[in-house]
Figure 1 (cartoon, helix red, strand yellow):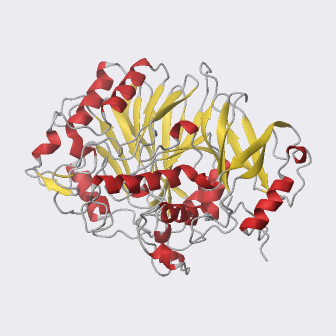
Figure 2 (cartoon, rainbow, N blue to C red):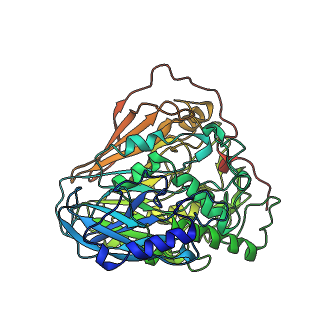
Length: 552
């Protein structure tokens, strides 16, 4: 009998979880035991100068169809330790937290009192089992003069379309923090064999997610991946949602138009509440981000000494509905409406106010959707834009970029996900005016797995480069973006894998860029076209958010 049956686990944890048991930390010392509750790994996030958030979720049966992970309907004590060394000889904090059933038996430990800019190690214990060890790092002190900050950003990890080999390589980088820009899960059914994964799953996983149980199980499925676990355990993360974390192309309280049962906004908000709760339960977020029904505060700011400030945005929860449908449109006048908003008035005011007050060298916007215009038609007389991107909110984009210029924001850099492609662009307050000066840059990262293998170049990418002179780079392979900020330069490397439809791919740097502080604009420093990688003529259908959708 599995001793992590609900009753057995509760009994074992209540005995082993007493305060007196903490000093010895007696246990198996491994998360590989068949009965471990730590099947979903450990994580840390939202680093501050005095602490971070530590996360785990107890789930000895992670794919149990009832969404409970094999846990009892009772609170369970979880011990945690933080040390200055990976052997835990210098323990600096320890305590006990309750893993409650109403939060999916997840644990979010908000640490305070740690030293700024320091590396720490952490672990959990429950039921006599000890979790894997995680590594994390606090943010530097607010006035610290840093010589460098290393970070990466990722997005779009469709589990059934590819293996997470890129995460295995990411875990081996030397980074201070990682940003996840959305689409942590996909709400669609995973298929009878788990797509390229080739595994058999319970029938529940074959359909789209609508309920809390279904969203919990979808997150648990993704979190069982060992490469994703390794990347989480290696660095603190800062995360935000995009559409597939709830439903494709949702906007505020509006569901995507189709035949699904959530077209009533009140019904959709119930679905959004379920998705947000499962999202919080599976990621290292602070209590300030704990959802209240369908509402979840995800936009927030993190500074790293005097070097860089990251403004993490939410481009889904407060936006107006997409104009002219969700897909491509030619001549959509509504996208130019000056009253339309992508961020909502409060978040937009928060963002511009914070940017105006910032005194750091670099000011980053970590957000979901491509901000630069992306014309899909190379004809000089026709412009076709995707309405789900910032192109559907053109006046809001101009208002934001012009506001940065007016406030003399230092070295603005936009980091974007969603598009399953690597893109680098220069930003201007007015893209229709060829004399409008470059005021910032944007780096869009490709997907971890969504879209399968991809290619170095395709027909749509060639059109993008021909139709958008501000666009300086394009690639359609999978991977992540690695960057290093110094007081003088921001260097960016597009890290790619040649395939994800089978495991074991190597990693390489496809292209590198540098941005000089005080001199906005892109300087490509390396271009390494892969050898023997096919170029395909078209990828119609790969980008569901650019596909034609029924009109509202």
